[in-house]
Image 1 (cartoon, rainbow, N blue to C red):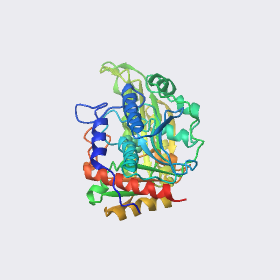
Image 2 (cartoon, protein in one colour; image 1 turned 90 degrees about the horizontal axis):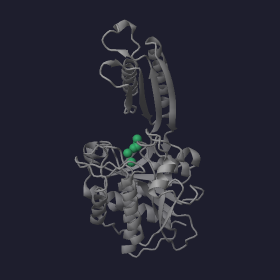
Image 3 (cartoon, helix red, strand yellow; image 1 turned 180 degrees about the horizontal axis):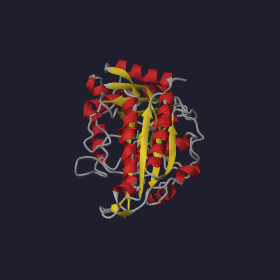
Image 4 (cartoon, rainbow, N blue to C red; image 1 turned 120 degrees about the vertical axis):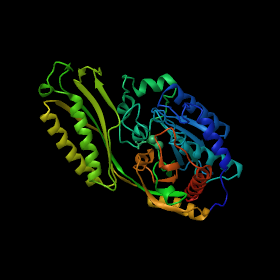
Length: 411
Ligand code: GLV
Ligand code: MN
Ligand code: MN
């Protein structure tokens, strides 16, 4: 295996330069998908890739591919990447680390004058977070044929703006068809976003699987009325219904420990006035578990308790599962490449299951795929305080470098 290393300082500097785009006062990043800040970050990524000698292609979902030629350029490429968009109170590493690690691999191949048999591509997938445009991983999903193009382009934010409109507006509605081409392999480097690697003092997480997710949207409708004269016993308070459901969501999560996660993260209350009993509440539910059967049992329970609560309180309910992403086993040969690369470089490592969703989950349906995790401070992510150690960031990229070169040189 390759003994050469990537340039950790250059990777770190690029991450810090990129983190200025959308920088928040608390040291994080707010770079929502398809905003002007997303455009600015995309432009910088594209400029750096061109400076590294890559040719650039953008597809109709705004996915960016930067290509470094292979000895046999007709072979399918080995592709590395992640996402540029962030959460509203996101950090400097979630997503963008995997994108810039891909670029750093290409820069290092240039430094060391290494020609690979298959071409190499660094990619940035559009709207991985699903924060502005639900669901998550939309554009890699279109690439993998999970969603059709019309579905992807018509995803709308809370103001009704669609991904299609916003891609046009920021100049990233590309001309290339989405998907319909082969990858030899796909690798995504990412911070762990949880505490396991740090707790166990391991540098590299060899990601074998990703857990499944179900996303729901719920609208409860009761009756708005005056907070003073309306007796407690004759109210139909939609927010009380939502509160009871949230408690049950949390209980269902706790009942399926150690692996279940259950979250209500977004809520809108109408009319949101302190002396009006809330007549309508909209909220989301995020359920996760590595086992599809358990996730489905959680789903059944949720539907039952929601119906009961709405009925007991005289509320009408619209309940929709808007997204199901099943648990994902990654490709054995690619996972082995990651493990071997960690071993070869002398980095401590352990196998790990991803708690978060990643573009790699969908790409794994159409290409042999694996992921490389590195620790993040206190396991915190989706938070402006998200942080990582420069030496771990470099180590993850070294592993990516070796795994990618191995796959690209295997006929
Ligand atoms: C994406 O960040 C997710 O929600 O896992
Ligand atoms: Mn991410
Ligand atoms: Mn994220």
